[in-house]
Image (cartoon, rainbow, N blue to C red; front, top):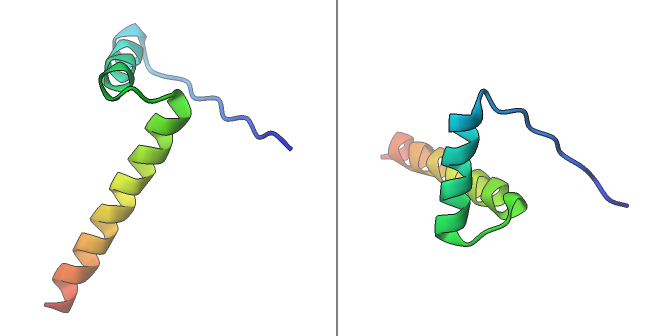
Length: 53
C-alpha cells in the first residue's frame, strides 16, 4: 500500500526555500519531512529533560 502526502506552500519563495534546504542536505522530499519530524521530536525530549532537572 502506498500512502501519499500533498503539501501546499504559501508561495514560490517558500517552495524555493524548502527546495534549497532539500538540495543542501541531499534528501528527498520524504527525507526532508522525516528529518523535520526527528528534529521536532528531539525538541520535545529536550523540553522533557529540562522539566526533570
